[in-house]
Length: 452
Image 1: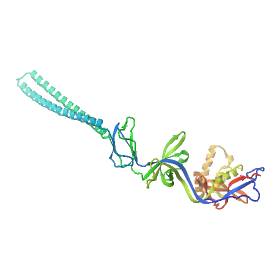
Image 2: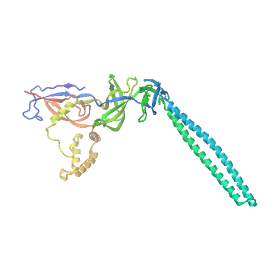
Image 3: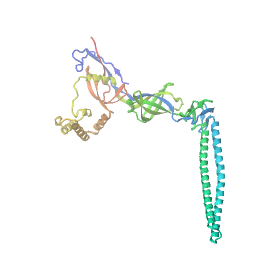
Image 4: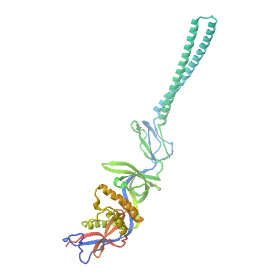
């Protein structure tokens, strides 16, 4: 922890001429000695625990539950019978479908006899026509008898083709009846509610004698969990924080049942689908957590702390010092303008500054967005040439927001003096001071106007 030391100006009240007007009352300053410590930047949220591999078992049919074979916490195996829907109606449909199949098979057998008889008649008609033509060649029969034999052959061919077509129709009818039998058998099988996985029952919503209706949606009868040694948490993260989250980040959480015990998890998935709750946008984040001792149960509320960034043993300053610096800076002259003003944090050398100023256009050479864009492009190329690797890295950190510039006021000789500093991460209470090293320096954290 940062040591806090209250420093009160003893030799009369000090008037801050740089920030207070001539009529202002004397002020006193409280300081803290800047020291090292830890900073943890976290996002707080709540979520609901659930089993990772839970399966909801429903009913695909409507009917009355005649038997329930399992209860809460019972261990089940895949395929085990959990409940029974009254099967009598569906068994009757199966019996009816079987009878239709048997009848069609009988009709097919009779039709095959008809086809065979038509084949016999067709062969006889062909032989009769051949004999009639031989007799006609010897002038033993008339042409009318030849015509009669040919007509008989044609009719026999048509009868045979008709019998074959009727056989095809019956075979198609048999296929349809067999499909209907299969469908009826499937429905009968579905009257047996069986476990799809190995696991145990964590929820049961039916009782013996209850009627379930699946006309509009699938009734949920059981919830099975494969294993509770791994749990998942579904948390809703505000849109202002979601940009800081990444997969793999550590999560610490507690549950109301065991408030003194801390559990650990990990961000497993960040879902991009937004959730709009009365105009508040949030995103679903899935967190995996181990549950080796089995103390975590589905449905528990988890109070989450998602670790965004953390540093150990770094110089840190109270955020009150930054707020005070803002107060002391207010009213002072504005920063110098120009294309090099934003490069002050890089600590440019005189030679670097001279090179940049010599090659950048003067302010009088033109104004406008197009000219400004050209200046920025030229400045970027020049910086790549003149900056050192350390300065380039610092510039990248400043652009990404990893490092930001700020001001702290140190109390020296009873006078607060500004010091430009590089700031790192913050946890809302403390902020990391990267450079310079101000260890042990008295940093102003509070200003108090003294009333006479």
